[in-house]
Image (cartoon, rainbow, N blue to C red; front, side, top):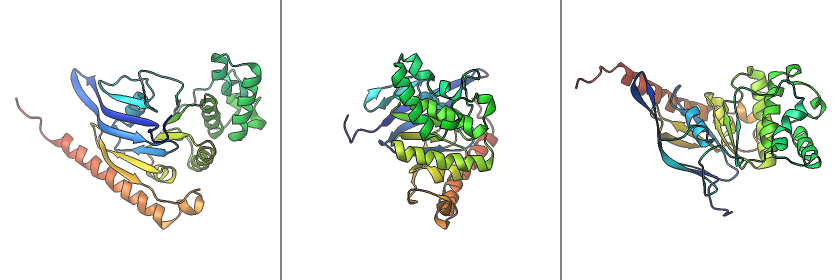
Length: 270
C-alpha cells in the first residue's frame, strides 16, 4: 500500500432521487480525498445530503455517476474495508456486550481464541470490560454507542464512517463520547469520516471540516482546523475553538440562507 495513496478518494459523484415524479439532485461532488489516519468531519445545511454521501461511501446506496476508491480499490458495495457507525445503536438485545462486539468475528468464522483476543482488546479500548456480560438493555445510551463502536472496530476496517453517532445522546454524554472517540482514534490511527449537524462537534473532532453547500451538495470549503492535539476541555473552551465554530457556522448559515432564497423564487414558466 502506497504511503501517499489517499485512504478514501471520491471523483465526480452524482446522485439524484425522484420525489413526487420530479428529480431532486442531491449530490454533485467533484472531488473529495481523505488521507490515511485523518479525522474529517462533514457539515452542511439541513437536508443537504450529508447522510446520503456517507451511505454512498459505505456502499449502501449506489451513485448515479462517479468513482469511490479505498486505498486505490474501487468501491462497488459494502465491504470490510469500511465500517459504519449509525446514530441508532442497532445492537442485538439478546446478546451480551461481548457477544455483540464479537458478532462480526463469528460471521467471519474467526477461531474462538482469535475472537476472544479481539473482543478483549476492544472492550479494554472502549472501557467496557467490566460490562462484558451485560445485555444492551442494562446500559446507558453512551455505553450502547461504545459497544456499537467496539463492534465495528473489531472488524478492523481501514476507514470508519460515522453518521451522527452521538446525535441521540444528552449534552454531557455527548461531550464524554467525543473525548472517548478522540482517544480511541489517537490509539488506533484509524481514518475517520464523521457526519454531524453539530458545528462545535465538527470543529472539536476534525483535522478538517468539509462544509457542504445546500442541495445539491458540493464542497463549499475545506476548513483546516489547526487546534493542537490531543484536544481537551481547555481547547474546547478556547477563543481559537470559538473562532473556528463561528467561521464554520457562518458558512453554513450562508448556504442555508441561499437555499431559502432559492425556495422562495417563483417557478420558471416553460
